[in-house]
Amino acid sequence: MGIESTLLIVKPDGVERGLVGEILVRIERKGYRIEKMQGMRITEELAGRHYAEHKGKPFYDELIEYITGGLSVVVLFRGENAIENVRVIMGATDPLDATPGSIRGAYATSVTHNLVHGSDSAASAEREIELFFGQAASA
Ligand code: DAT
Ligand code: MG
Image (cartoon, rainbow, N blue to C red; front, side, top):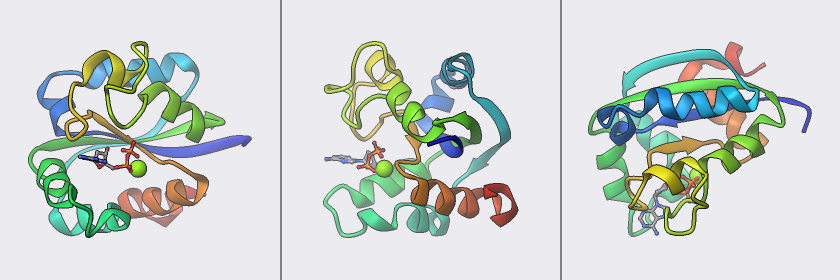
């Protein structure tokens, strides 16, 4: 709650499909501001640290292959209740469950290729921002 920072990733399918602008504009128009942004190909090492909580799950290998398979755009958004609101704008993890007005509900068809990542808690946001932008960025 309050003014928060959160990490959003437009995953490789979003970049390949030319949806970066469409995705970011929804979050900007809701009221959040881009503080940092970088295009990068996420390495296996970074992907493994980012998705450490999912290690050992049946979808883990596919997830790592997908997130490292092309260019991603990594964004630090900041504003009032940013963490929870960005998750709402993204929609549920499985696009079948996502509301049609959400990013995943509007543009994604598969739970693997679900276009975006967003931090799911204050602890995750702090950890992920540090991982992608370094400690100074998460203050
Ligand atoms: P979210 O990305 O909504 O935070 P998560 O953290 O539970 O969801 O999972 C991370 C990613 O892993 C998710 O965006 C897509 C993939 N994933 C999750 N559950 C899956 C499943 N049952 N089958 C295939 N991929 C899955
Ligand atoms: Mg998650």
